[in-house]
Image (cartoon, rainbow, N blue to C red; front, side, top):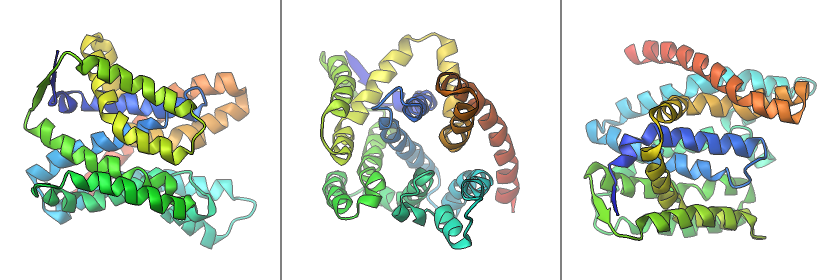
Length: 302
């Protein structure tokens, strides 16, 4: 059996859609291991950033495009959200801490991933240049060890720290994708299936979540390879649906758990709220993306 690494680029949006569905299922408590979707997303983001930097590695241009993609949507949704959740005990200092991500030190983790991805965007151009060095592949593994240790020292940041290594690994995978490398071995598909099974098994083990995230560092890429095999066998309508969802990951992430599911759960109960949270989040995300495109177009044209 043969695997073409360029398929990571070909099916990147669909894989983004799968990552988002994993995260949404985790949010509604039906997929305990669904948070591995974050690892999937970071790997795929690194691949996209690698291609973008290869085309144009000018820092100002790169940062402007990425931050304009993230910040308008984040601010439009996060500002009213943080005001609403503390409406009975509003403090401007606490509001600003939450909005800037510093609230994570006080267990405010509603939108921690936005801060994580912004940090990843900041380091991406520099790591892109490091890739040219012969032994740079060691860096993600060293990062994994260092960040695991830091996570034990600063538990509030563990949720973020143990994800940076997989992001860096994604850049090395991106080189294989960009160069259209292939591997051929009869055990490729069985190994990929095993990776998915191990994710489920690891989640059920009575070990600290940080160790589970460390294991996902090794299991995320072969799991994504498994989904590529599956996508190739799926009908066009499934690929189109996942492609559509994959283009709305930021907006869906911002809206689903803390707004749509929370409100629908309160209004209709868990089961109906959980079911409705999927189409409602996707519907709202689509229109938020339209607004963000208008804002982004105006900002980038200046």
